[in-house]
Length: 139
Image (cartoon, rainbow, N blue to C red; front, side):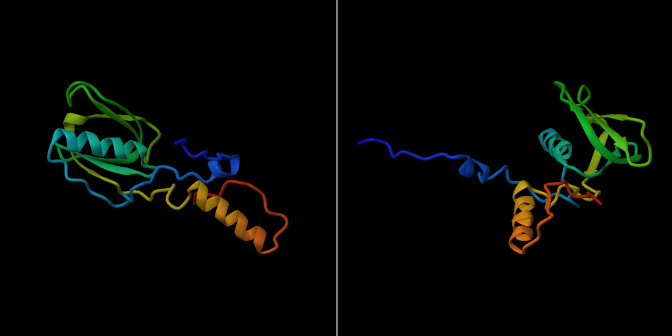
């Protein structure tokens, strides 16, 4: 018995589902273990909004995580962020993190490729003629 042939076309490939994103805006993960902390920081790295890190000494920093470096231990692992009230980059070792909160607005929420294309076709179907494929303002 032969395998069925699938006709993969450009049109078919353009509508393939992307990676599902979990809604994490406002989430305060429980950091009970090293694995919990590492997982939460990986999600924070992918997040397109600000996070608030509370250090074990009680100090807090809120900003955008732009880098993380995973080491063998928590002390050797570092997260780097740009605080929302400064352009100076801050490094925080994982071993100093007591709490993490996804405190800022997720600027990518609702801005999937599928949503963008759907809006385009809705405008076209409504008869608009001067529509262009331009990015939306994030604010």
